[in-house]
Image (cartoon, rainbow over all chains, first blue to last red):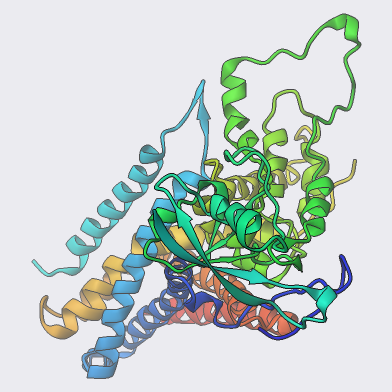
Length: 137
Length: 247
Length: 118
């Protein structure tokens, strides 16, 4: 602890300075920072999809080259980690929705499981839809 | 009788101490003994110079909040047996200046609390002749959870945003603002929002870590209160876009 | 009483919209295209099939909205991560500009890509 006298309050009151590594001191803090870092993987996903669409637009050779590049170990592992982090985002996001969106319908609030459940339903629907669109029959 | 070592933070600025240290005490305990019982034993039997706050010893006054092995707890509700064989480290509540030993300066919290006007605010008072402000059980339900706050500041010790910036109003103050915002008798929501809308001190500084709600000994969900407040502020902002919307 | 309009509610709504869209759309999209295809679990979609999927202007606008929202979600969240996590609040303005500006650049790139697809 570095000596740090408080600016306000009783004379000689001692203020402990927060460490830069505060998020490593407790598991819930680490899980929180991990959750926040999912945003980086969200951004990377958008970039990757845009690069894919651009390659598709440019021609067959560029399209195949893009997927060859995506199959390279560095990119493939990064995207594997990306998928894991995206799922972590989805799960943490949906679990928090009921605490943010509290709407009263008549006398009672809409139950938390209904709020979360509707999101999971949408996720399932879009997932099935994308699979149907992208997996060749 | 069992014995356990309690490592208790000491800070005696009157004795020219520059920073806090840990002092070890061996304390006997029964199964029902809390950390507070241990501290009281130390003060009564071993070292009368130890300073700390406590009062009701049953979890309703909010005085005895401290860090127990790094977790913010009401020491009257933390049992020594749960930390056996020990040692148990007892330190002052995190994120507040230490006055002496386990006593922290709570002025910052009180300032934040008063600023949100945690009382019923009326634009017009009803004359007494018109009778009471009546409230149905359902209307009570809407804010009841947030009224359970005992101002123990454990949520502040758990909040990393407050740890980094004590200018942040903090979980309890905002939850208590919501307690009144959601009270059907209150008319002060606009005033409180005006105060809590500022960038890094109000509701927008919160990043929904959620540890405040985990730590709360009274089952209040300050994190949820703050996110709901953000949604209210967002709806309010959208409302200002509609020229004919009621203000 | 006049209300001072701050920008925070707007930023938060953008963050929320982006976060919800990202949560619903991105996992399947990346799992299928970025992992399953390269490892050979599913066949590479025909380029012309993909292009016909995104051909309609409605789809392109819709995709742009999803991409822009997701990028905005990153910007808002990352801004707070830098502010709190690294405690570099003295670089506040730089972080603000870098994050939301970066999202704007990304959105512009997305618009350019979606516009130029045949």
